[in-house]
Length: 202
Image (cartoon, rainbow, N blue to C red; front, side):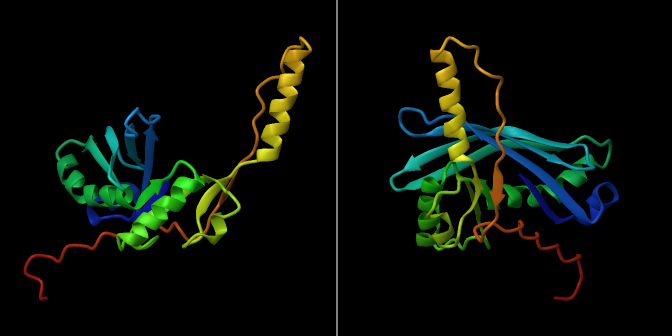
């Protein structure tokens, strides 16, 4: 997913006024105890920055804890370290506020858990999902999700199965369109407050 936040002053010569952070988190299937491991990658448009690492999703009672261990670096001589310090809070904020849930049923549980914990959605945490079930617009808040063509998937699957039963060669892979349905459970990552210059009046 791509998030846009105001760029820190040190990064503006490379990125312009907006920091475009491309975040990819790929989770593996759950293990026998229900925990999941994943990989995280971050790239920033216009800047030789990279971030790679691992994540772990652990169930503790009724709570799901997500822990990331990753290294953020900017490959620029002399000034790279300073840019890393300036940009890192923005990258961390995007990771903390932009999380995708595997399907609408899990997303409904996530919204309930966040509400019980007093975490406002989407002001502090955005939640996005997949499937666009009938109940998705009626969750609180209404759920941003990806709509998939269920009927077309069924029709294509049946056609492929019938062809194989007839001894025919199945047709090539069929790509079906999906649609992102944006509702009120997602918002842009909030800006990171700028630091007050040393010596500036409060």
